[in-house]
Amino acid sequence: MLKTLIQMPVRVVLNFSILLSKLSDVLDLKVKLANSTEAELRSLQSSLQNSKDEVAADLQRNVFKKCAHSDSSVACISDAL
Image (cartoon, rainbow, N blue to C red; front, side):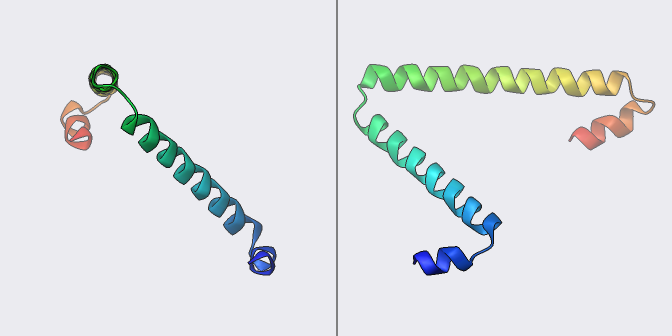
């Protein structure tokens, strides 16, 4: 396997390394979630929902700001959809 890695382009090896790192993060998260209490899971769910709502509101504000500065509001709104 080492010989194969040496023969691969650097970009492929780096992408593989990043993929392994992400996979490790996912597995760590699964273990943490599996060992969490119901209260911790509810807290996490609430936090994720709040973050989702904040991102949605921020995106909506940014779209409206962009449309307000656009020459064609109708085109801007259709692009946003």
